[in-house]
Image (cartoon, rainbow, N blue to C red):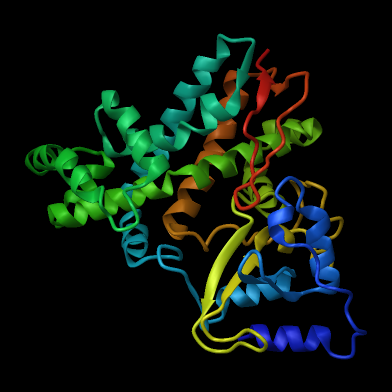
Length: 364
């Protein structure tokens, strides 16, 4: 396996003295890309004191860092055992139920927009599709959508404090499913599992349907709307959507920074230090990608790093991909005239989580 130390030693050996350390990441929230270029070119490994972390910015280095066993996820980050259990559960009939729910939720939300001439896709589609999917897939009461949405967006607390509230909410529903199982995901999860186990799996699914998935969908739609010719191709060739989605994750990942902690020294990085893997910089590394700042829905090998690194990585990656593919299909079917609305668009201002806050479109 390629180790981070090997990559950095190979890259930096024999290079001339580097210029002074660059500005901190904390100064680059509005537009981090010039700083990313400086980091990749002159500072592939540098300690950012105000940010409190070692920065890794080149594609190969970030990829190696994420795979290095000496760099472990911080508490509350990384793929959890619960996420792995949910990934195993979301197979067979459960996977079919989840896919059907995404299709249904996307169709309902897109149809509501069809009666309007202008809409904000972030507030009226992207923010709600993951929640609508979870509600439909689990067969939860429709009137509880707002409460489920709150759980998806805010989580259940870092120590699982909200888990008891979720358990109380689910208990009568699981009792009904055990007595009269149906074709929904909750019935599948209830089979041969305790109430506590079901609550844990549902809680993990709610986390996967959270802000990161909504942000990734918003960036995906924004990229396609900014490239109407590519969008027109996808309208006729929906089989190409998976590649277009991967390209969006490469160019505009919903999380620009994933942190790791060194459990032992890794080259210049001391044990106990925090390492910031800059996904936003790695995805635009010109040594890995041709014309990396350009969005190309048909790029042959986008190789995104965005998923597989979050707190609910496996389930999140699956749900995000389904919302992207079926969400786009529903929008194109319901809104044949879909295009950007005239006027300025709000630029993202958050460094760690970057995505459009508003995505105003014309529907006809």
